[in-house]
Image (cartoon, rainbow, N blue to C red; front, top):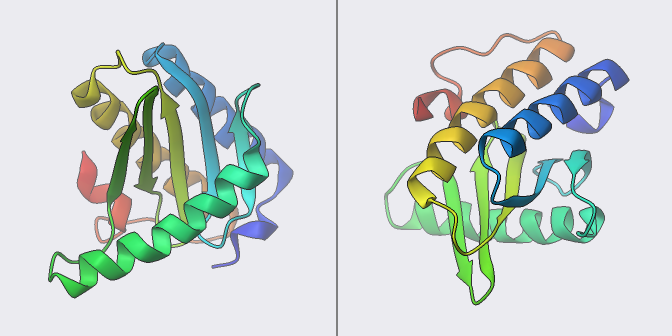
Length: 145
């Protein structure tokens, strides 16, 4: 699936979903949807360099996918990094896209996971619909709800 060719109206809907997610989790300082190869689909963040984050997410995704596969844990679902100043969380959004979130250290991680998983399912649906595909229960992000 070539997510770089997502139509402009799908980009607007993905951006709207990112904004709704940030409203549900106020401790988010940034939200980004990107293709698995590191291309920005939509972003809702003033402080973060989206292209750099998308590229680094693609690199981390490759390592996380390999680690998950090598250890027999199945396909990639999510990655959580905790730094001194907060969290970076990445969630599968279908097979070819990811949702990456930047969160303050005081975020409720359980709530972050719950809301991000819901948004990743919605983003998967928006991407697949825009490309004429249907997401189903077998779609990787659909298992999170």
